[in-house]
Length: 355
View 1 (cartoon, rainbow, N blue to C red):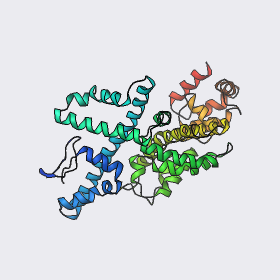
View 2 (cartoon, rainbow, N blue to C red; view 1 turned 180 degrees about the vertical axis):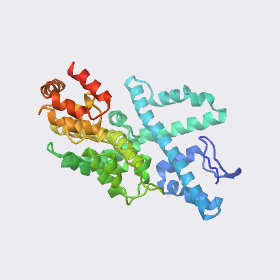
View 3 (tube, rainbow, N blue to C red; view 1 turned 120 degrees about the vertical axis):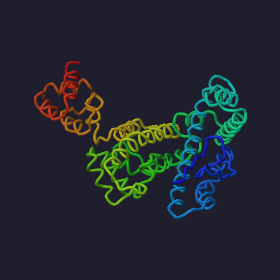
View 4 (cartoon, rainbow, N blue to C red; view 1 turned 90 degrees about the vertical axis):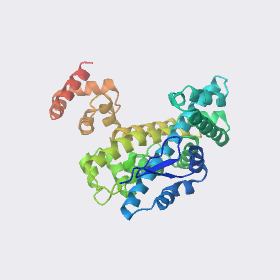
């Protein structure tokens, strides 16, 4: 099988130890990604056509090149997102954002270890990214809003448009599953989790998101992918865990958090709606169906099915103090449930009740 590589600051792709040169350097590649996505997305096919080989080799090469280009794109976006935050901090301190960005680069280990030629490429790349940030969003105040998210300006503006479109549809009494359906376009479009991106069925992913919110087991979630594939792989329970814990729980909750921040800066002024959205963010993070179950989980009894079982003992207003009192009143029933779980949770329960 061919060995393919796109080094961080070079143009050469190595194929079976033969150098095949593509004249697309780092800066040109960044410009293609941001300014001509159609050409960028077509690079794997163009490169494979140039390399040749049998059908299997071409398929393997295409997948490898596509992954490398994806990694490069993720790097550009990560640098850009960090630059937005750093440049905003510099402006708050009345410094030049351009000079601050260059200073950040020059003080980095990557710059120190680079050759003089590579340092020049890095300076050009950073200069392009920072100028692009300033041109896309000239307003310092608006850049501060985007700096709160984990996205670069381009993605942040696209997410902002979705968030603004959703805003008029929000109600303070919306069910969590209803919020999932409403925010699904953002959760799916901006999620870079590899299992979510390679799953062949968006509908199965939606069903998995609902099951995750309902507190259902990974085995139950896994069964929802029975007719799907993850790339060329058959679904396993590991895929279900990855989709739920990292795709929904980690990246999904960050996307919702970014939406809330963007909405708050663009007309969301109802505290009851914002409170509901924050609850939805936590529900997506932990995979739990109710505020009471979330309260149990955040007390330290952090096992999803246990949190759901114990949530029936949580009072209507689930403060820690009220919940501890309720657990003490129902001590025998609570311990019967906890006894079915690993010993750690019994020790944790003792700690909670003695607090």
